[in-house]
Image 1 (spheres, one colour):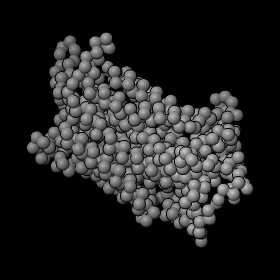
Image 2 (cartoon, one colour; image 1 turned 180 degrees about the vertical axis):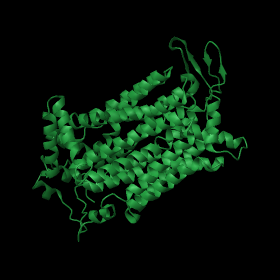
Image 3 (spheres, helix red, strand yellow; image 1 turned 60 degrees about the vertical axis):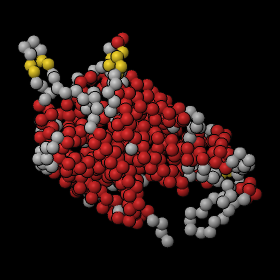
Image 4 (cartoon, one colour; image 1 turned 90 degrees about the horizontal axis):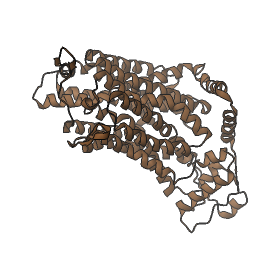
Length: 541
């Protein structure tokens, strides 16, 4: 197809536009301008970059789960402190989400994403030199605070380089790259952590071990992505809304030149005109920019949020917020202790013990934490580990492969079986698995039940799809933001619950998780019009 042709998505025969026709009307909308640019190299670079940024977010927030079991002695961590450390990154994400959204809408997408990724690498590097619980906790909070800027903005940046027809295609491509990137976590952990070298740094009083290097390596994809973004332009859509017509046209011509070849003629565009959505966005941005003072800004945020919690959206908003809370409470909260608990179960199974529950293993390991009490002080002596069992990494890798394949499968069948059926199956199966973990006395089966439990994360993407279908355009982004905030809060509470209760009330931790997931199963049936969403999306004939 000619580079200046517009693909027809209405089902009618294609109607190519030659150069002469376009020249008669070179004032076009932004979406039409993007439609005249060939989908090519720049689009693929943006998709890969967006997927890498999302992967960087995963490595920064969940990589700590592999550090906790092997940094226990270096940082003198109790189980309670492990729970706090595993969750503090998400606390940083929660606290900063609205800030980065505000800055991205006023300063620019790239101006938020690139610096925050580079600053995250610096914060993570400093955290690798931490010598105690409080220093690493503060630095991990800072890393979470900063990396939130990229995760909250990268979808907007990617989407604004694509027209309406290709936008979903691009986002799904970035999600696929992210799914592949998830496999990096256990792979990097195995290669880096499972070493026994150490480096003394006397002037810092630090023994630099592999787990410290692991933190830095996990942050490298974010640094490379941040540096790569300085080569790319600002979102042309954002520039347009800032009144930078010439810069917008220059970016579009740059994309056209790189996608089509060096000898191609420039696009005949003199003016980009605003469509209805552009005008609404510009009005909202003008109000946001003119808000003076803290009270005015807070009032504006409230006016954008309050409609979600009023009729007719109140019921749907409350349900999807709780569904995200339950999803993150189990999938992220429980995952933070996943490598440590899995490693204990693998050791038990390898020792030939075939009749013991997961909680019995946890209690036995916890009892080793305090073995000697001196009159003058308390001495904690227990086996310090620098490595994890190879089987732990193998099972973790299997989990990530299942996740990648599962997301791909859900994308294929979601329009066939419906969102309700997928959510009910995921919540129900994972909830039952959580309830059984505390009572099953076969170590291998317990490990697989634990893996099924953390697979509750499958429901997160489906809940987001429900939100997109259930809320109008002007409330959709805020609805996703609020629901994800409740989800991340659930991840924080889930991780801290394990830290507080695992050593003393192990059975209750899994019972609570199972109850939350079963409650999510029931609430899924009460989402208004969930069975008619797909019919609403189909065009009327």
